[in-house]
Image (cartoon, rainbow, N blue to C red; front, side, top):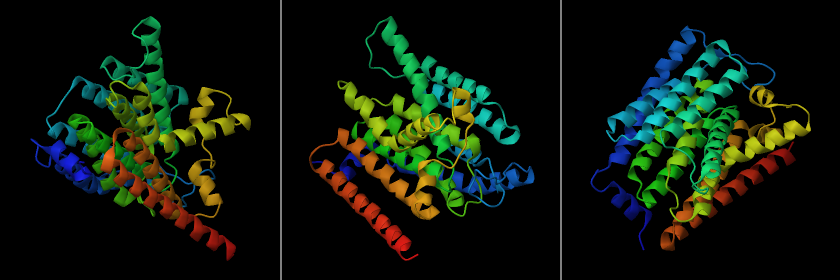
Length: 357
């Protein structure tokens, strides 16, 4: 039985350590660019000002997403491995990023943001990145187009919703990207693996400055770009050629923390009468997300972020194991069990802290 090291070694065969070098380059570029972007955002007074719906106490520079975007795009282009699908991801991602940048500086309407996200999703589809599991006829093709748009717009906003606590959205994106990279390695999709590992490196380089206490935020510029790119990678992947159930379940599991929070808060806000239409759904901001609720239960912000990281890692391993077998599956299940016990320890410490008050 092959170990994970065997699989990664064979994955890198012919391109010695390319994935590692791409990760390292993206990490270092993001690490070096982020302070520059932070300085520019501060000088230009592009700041996230605290209010009653936010948890930070002092103004924090925005535009961290610009550093991630530049790092990611430069890394991908230096890889010199291009495809028509990649063009769709880059073009669509650029549109989402630019609209997010405008929103961070001047604030724009929810309608315009939604229109830009649908446009970016349509560009993905034009360049061949779309869900493919329905019958090859008019209603099947139309259904795939509609579901692809819903998927991409949904993941964009789900990641944006999670950008409410230091290090949360960027760290979760890195975890999901690493999971996609591992599955790409297992399924011999080298090109897709390169895209995923470059995104992970870009996020982790930025995370040094975004983890609590954050000195720069992603802003809509970054959170929407990360959501769009994750959604595109999920659709691009050939996760199961002959089993559409696996092909659909795998990316859903890897991204399930984002998906769960989006579905939960949407239902809760509708039932509470806080959201009555799509425009209000996009515009509404409140302290009712998973991370806010954990803090209300007594978790510190760092405990909350680490707790959600571990949940995402456990669910990501579940997605990975859809494509593994033998000893490799056992190794991942042992790792998953280890993460679960760390989650239990965090719960125990939090419970003891509350009991002592």
